[in-house]
Length: 143
Image (cartoon, rainbow, N blue to C red; front, side, top):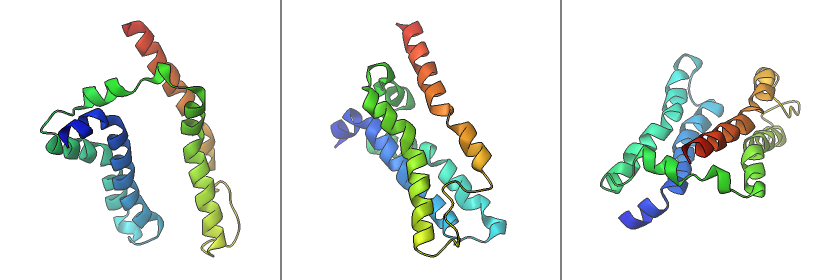
Protein backbone atom coordinates (compact mmCIF):
# COMPACT_ATOMS: atom_id res chain seq x y z
CA UNK A 1 0.00 0.00 0.00
CA UNK A 2 2.81 2.42 0.90
CA UNK A 3 4.55 1.79 -2.40
CA UNK A 4 1.36 2.55 -4.32
CA UNK A 5 0.90 5.81 -2.42
CA UNK A 6 4.50 6.90 -3.00
CA UNK A 7 4.36 5.94 -6.69
CA UNK A 8 1.07 7.79 -7.33
CA UNK A 9 1.42 10.59 -4.80
CA UNK A 10 0.64 13.44 -7.20
CA UNK A 11 -2.55 11.85 -8.53
CA UNK A 12 -3.68 10.82 -5.05
CA UNK A 13 -2.95 14.31 -3.73
CA UNK A 14 -5.07 15.87 -6.49
CA UNK A 15 -8.00 13.45 -6.13
CA UNK A 16 -8.17 13.54 -2.34
CA UNK A 17 -7.80 17.33 -2.26
CA UNK A 18 -10.66 17.75 -4.73
CA UNK A 19 -12.87 15.31 -2.82
CA UNK A 20 -12.32 17.01 0.54
CA UNK A 21 -12.64 20.50 -0.92
CA UNK A 22 -15.79 19.78 -2.89
CA UNK A 23 -17.35 17.94 0.05
CA UNK A 24 -17.38 21.23 1.95
CA UNK A 25 -17.94 23.55 -1.00
CA UNK A 26 -20.90 21.49 -2.23
CA UNK A 27 -22.58 21.98 1.15
CA UNK A 28 -21.94 25.70 0.82
CA UNK A 29 -23.25 25.80 -2.77
CA UNK A 30 -26.38 23.86 -1.85
CA UNK A 31 -27.18 26.35 0.90
CA UNK A 32 -26.88 23.85 3.75
CA UNK A 33 -25.04 26.41 5.88
CA UNK A 34 -26.57 29.70 7.05
CA UNK A 35 -24.86 32.79 5.68
CA UNK A 36 -23.45 33.78 9.07
CA UNK A 37 -21.55 30.45 9.24
CA UNK A 38 -20.54 30.19 5.57
CA UNK A 39 -16.90 30.80 6.54
CA UNK A 40 -16.74 27.32 8.11
CA UNK A 41 -17.26 25.17 4.97
CA UNK A 42 -15.37 27.70 2.88
CA UNK A 43 -12.33 27.50 5.16
CA UNK A 44 -12.48 23.72 5.49
CA UNK A 45 -12.59 23.41 1.71
CA UNK A 46 -9.71 25.86 1.41
CA UNK A 47 -7.43 23.89 3.72
CA UNK A 48 -8.08 20.61 1.87
CA UNK A 49 -4.52 20.50 0.43
CA UNK A 50 -3.07 20.62 3.95
CA UNK A 51 -5.48 17.94 5.18
CA UNK A 52 -4.62 15.77 2.18
CA UNK A 53 -0.90 16.10 2.84
CA UNK A 54 -1.39 15.08 6.47
CA UNK A 55 -3.50 12.07 5.40
CA UNK A 56 -0.95 10.93 2.82
CA UNK A 57 1.90 11.33 5.30
CA UNK A 58 0.08 9.25 7.93
CA UNK A 59 -0.81 6.46 5.49
CA UNK A 60 2.66 6.30 3.91
CA UNK A 61 4.60 6.53 7.20
CA UNK A 62 6.00 9.95 6.19
CA UNK A 63 7.39 8.76 2.84
CA UNK A 64 5.21 11.33 1.05
CA UNK A 65 6.00 15.00 1.56
CA UNK A 66 5.26 18.24 -0.23
CA UNK A 67 8.68 18.30 -1.89
CA UNK A 68 8.13 14.82 -3.32
CA UNK A 69 4.70 15.73 -4.63
CA UNK A 70 6.03 18.84 -6.36
CA UNK A 71 8.97 16.92 -7.86
CA UNK A 72 6.63 14.36 -9.47
CA UNK A 73 4.84 17.12 -11.38
CA UNK A 74 6.69 17.38 -14.68
CA UNK A 75 5.17 20.43 -16.32
CA UNK A 76 7.82 20.74 -19.02
CA UNK A 77 7.23 17.22 -20.34
CA UNK A 78 3.44 17.22 -20.37
CA UNK A 79 1.75 16.81 -23.73
CA UNK A 80 -0.24 19.80 -25.01
CA UNK A 81 -3.67 18.09 -24.88
CA UNK A 82 -3.29 17.55 -21.12
CA UNK A 83 -2.41 21.21 -20.61
CA UNK A 84 -5.50 22.24 -22.57
CA UNK A 85 -7.67 19.87 -20.52
CA UNK A 86 -6.18 21.28 -17.30
CA UNK A 87 -6.73 24.86 -18.41
CA UNK A 88 -10.35 24.40 -19.43
CA UNK A 89 -11.56 21.83 -16.89
CA UNK A 90 -12.54 24.36 -14.20
CA UNK A 91 -14.42 26.75 -16.54
CA UNK A 92 -16.12 23.73 -18.11
CA UNK A 93 -17.21 22.39 -14.71
CA UNK A 94 -18.54 25.81 -13.68
CA UNK A 95 -20.49 26.17 -16.93
CA UNK A 96 -21.85 22.63 -16.64
CA UNK A 97 -22.85 23.31 -13.03
CA UNK A 98 -24.70 26.47 -14.05
CA UNK A 99 -26.54 24.61 -16.82
CA UNK A 100 -27.53 21.80 -14.44
CA UNK A 101 -28.62 24.32 -11.82
CA UNK A 102 -30.89 25.92 -14.42
CA UNK A 103 -32.25 22.58 -15.66
CA UNK A 104 -33.09 21.40 -12.12
CA UNK A 105 -34.93 24.64 -11.41
CA UNK A 106 -32.55 26.20 -8.90
CA UNK A 107 -32.08 29.24 -11.17
CA UNK A 108 -34.77 31.12 -13.07
CA UNK A 109 -32.40 32.20 -15.87
CA UNK A 110 -29.48 30.44 -17.51
CA UNK A 111 -26.26 32.24 -16.57
CA UNK A 112 -23.16 30.71 -18.06
CA UNK A 113 -21.08 33.04 -15.90
CA UNK A 114 -22.55 34.09 -12.59
CA UNK A 115 -23.14 37.85 -12.64
CA UNK A 116 -21.40 38.69 -9.36
CA UNK A 117 -17.95 37.13 -9.72
CA UNK A 118 -17.87 37.19 -13.53
CA UNK A 119 -15.18 39.86 -13.69
CA UNK A 120 -13.03 37.85 -11.31
CA UNK A 121 -13.65 34.73 -13.43
CA UNK A 122 -12.40 36.43 -16.57
CA UNK A 123 -9.32 37.67 -14.72
CA UNK A 124 -8.58 34.15 -13.46
CA UNK A 125 -8.33 32.80 -17.03
CA UNK A 126 -4.77 34.11 -17.17
CA UNK A 127 -3.65 32.22 -14.05
CA UNK A 128 -3.17 28.77 -15.65
CA UNK A 129 -0.84 29.94 -18.47
CA UNK A 130 1.08 32.18 -16.06
CA UNK A 131 1.54 29.32 -13.56
CA UNK A 132 2.64 26.93 -16.29
CA UNK A 133 5.14 29.47 -17.60
CA UNK A 134 6.53 30.11 -14.11
CA UNK A 135 6.88 26.37 -13.45
CA UNK A 136 8.62 25.85 -16.78
CA UNK A 137 10.96 28.80 -16.13
CA UNK A 138 11.76 27.47 -12.66
CA UNK A 139 12.47 24.02 -14.10
CA UNK A 140 14.74 25.51 -16.78
CA UNK A 141 16.66 27.57 -14.22
CA UNK A 142 17.16 24.60 -11.90
CA UNK A 143 18.42 22.36 -14.74
